[in-house]
Length: 129
Image 1 (cartoon, rainbow, N blue to C red):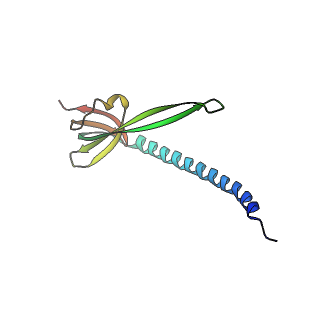
Image 2 (cartoon, helix red, strand yellow):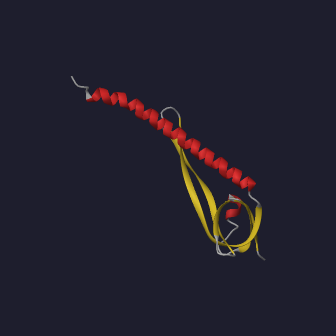
Image 3 (cartoon, rainbow, N blue to C red):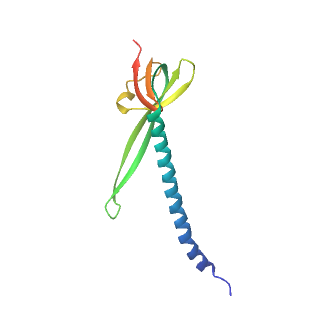
């Protein structure tokens, strides 16, 4: 007598579920460790102020779906925007930094001035007069 295919499938499904759960936990740990390492690198980086030109801006929009209630019949969607600017240094090197929402509309491509940053943290931009 052989093993029935139905019996073997029902015994492998819990293994697949556990492996998927472990993979998700490992991914979350890796993301948290990388974020902590970047935070530490930023804290240990010098605060720099350099002459730059803004050469590009972009917006990343994330949408989120929210469900309420046990029957999942009530839901709404929200969106959040993250803003980035690409700065070109005098030597031609470029760097893209996330910029605060409140400053996104005040920066324009082609602006020149002094960028203040620490590692990958945007600290400010003072436009040339």
